[in-house]
Amino acid sequence: MLSAIGRAFRTPDLRRKLLFTLGIIAIFRLGAFIPSPGVNYQNVKACLSPGVSGQQTGIYQMLNLFSGGALLQVSIFALGIMPYITASIIVQLLRVVIPRFQELYDEGQAGQTKLTQYTRYLTIALGLLNATTLVSLVRSGQLFPNCQLPIIPDTSVIATILVVITLTAGTGLIMWLGELVTEKGIGNGMSLLIFTSIAAQFPASLGAIWTSKGPGTFFIVLVVGLVTMALVIFVEQSQRRIPVQYAKRMIGRRTVGGTSTYIPIKVNMAGVIPVIFASSMLYLPALIAQFNTPHDGSAPAGWVEWINNNLTRGDHPVYMVIYFVMIVFFTYFYVAITFNPEEVSDNMKKYGGFIPGIRAGRPTADYLQYVLSRITLPGAMYLGIVALIPLIALVLVNANQNFPFGGTSILIVVGVGLETVKQIDAQLQQRHYEGLLR
Image (tube, rainbow, N blue to C red; front, side):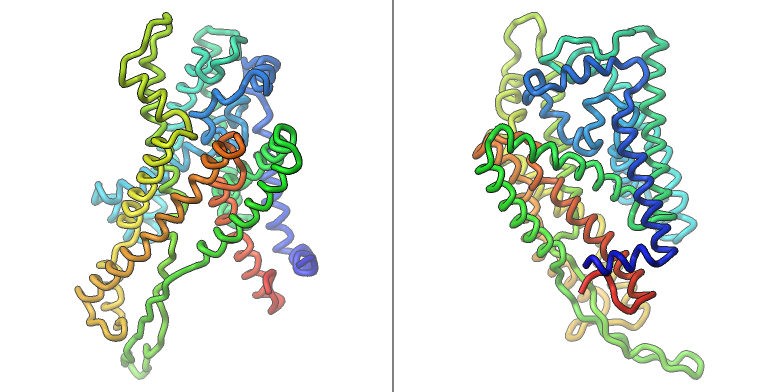
């Protein structure tokens, strides 16, 4: 393994790509610690101290995770990559609703370039909205309920506009850095920035477990984490291969076709998107209840009290059950809109392909739908179980919800890590006939 890494750095163009990627990651992490203008960083550190912060930031923990801890520090990269992720998901879903978006997607590179441009515009718009919301949360004290220190002391309009513009510009800069990595570096830039944000939280999370729970619990968590990681890698690499045979055809004087291939259908085709969807949907009731909670000491409405008791605590059974059910639902929903059996069947028929034993056309589409619906169930169950690991850890060892080996964090870290290593391996094989992996 070490010799393979050495070969990667001895190859000039690959070394250049790796160093460029590492440089962008360093800039990204540096921005997470530069406070926004007008923010009192000393007060931020005081509010983030363990004795003050506690568990009050549960609603914003996922956003803080994706920003690499920058959200709660109100840094220039506080919004992280989340506006871009949200914009990408919205544009992808709009393909189902707006025919023009689907037409652009089918046009190939030119159409997809336009969709990318729409995604960029939407990212900036969402960044502006999120920045305004974040400043409002900071000013109202909802981001740090247990801390009364002023985070943004200057309440003037000019100071507010300056902070909002800075946070929005930070989102645009992160988007540009991610695209630079995709174009000139190794791997998918946006995915690598998310990977960096999450991996940066691992040492602090493990250190907190060591300090608060002792070495025994720390090593138990470490073993559970390694086992979970191995199982996630196994499932992420698992796929159902549907054989496809292409008939021989005469094109001019040449005979083409007659080859055998397969359609790989992964057990987890939806990736981490259903977990993000479910988390976002469960945050909405908590946010609505938070805005409807009276601040004069009077009793809240019944529905507000029920939400506060059941849907804001990750260790509550009702929260766990709803979370699991929503993940299963969104897995089926997302797979249904991203994999179209009829489109795959039509493409196979166009190029003379068929599944052995299955007639071309509608029977092929029905067969693909049958296989897809059966293989999505274990994938959905797997996603739900992995997502519940941090919540179960919260109950068993009283670890916070940023438990490092579970939920979105482990899924993203393993998925992005595997894809990046595969890309490095492929480039090494092109030059040395021997890759990074054996």
